[in-house]
Image 1 (tube, rainbow, N blue to C red):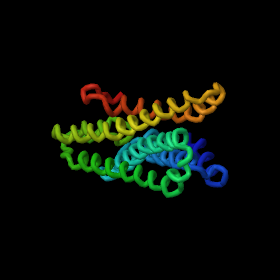
Image 2: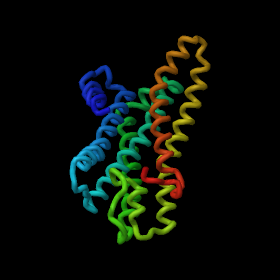
Image 3: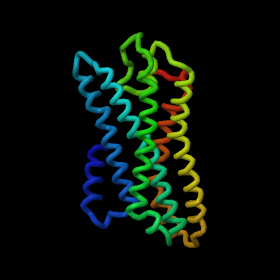
Image 4: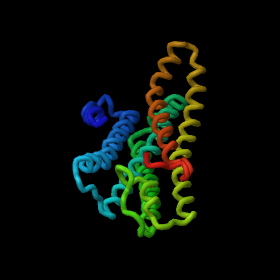
Length: 232
């Protein structure tokens, strides 16, 4: 994945023909994936080779905050990409106006603001809890559920807030994407030519695959009841 993103990002930057909204969002998506890989993998590799596998309290908090910021932004960015495809197929005459440089940059700023806000709230809630029990983290990075299990106690309110933010990050963007694609599929089906329908749909297939993998895996991990969580 790192090698693929290492090719995608400079290619988009250097090739002026790719300076379009769809490739702009793809470049931001690749950058996001690269960054949250570096948040987890280097520390994990060090721990695999080291005899003493430790992480400081602040280091754990920083890792969780950075990971949540990037993964939440990633989720909202997929929704922004769905909106871009919706405008391209359903409102092509206004595409250059709605998805100009200012519009694309505004969407990315909004995406990052949502990711930052969610990550600050969740990280603050978790790391303000008392940690007087075991300090052994049964996971390869500081994820939400493994760190919560180390707290001596935590209120139902904090659990509810974290769960609702998880729903907000995963369900709301997914619903926006589904609405966009309902309109897109409806517009594609109105194309009289079978070749035209196939060509139009093929441009959105890759986005649909990414959306399915991302939201499917993330929902399985973060939207399960706490009783169903296990380290394995």
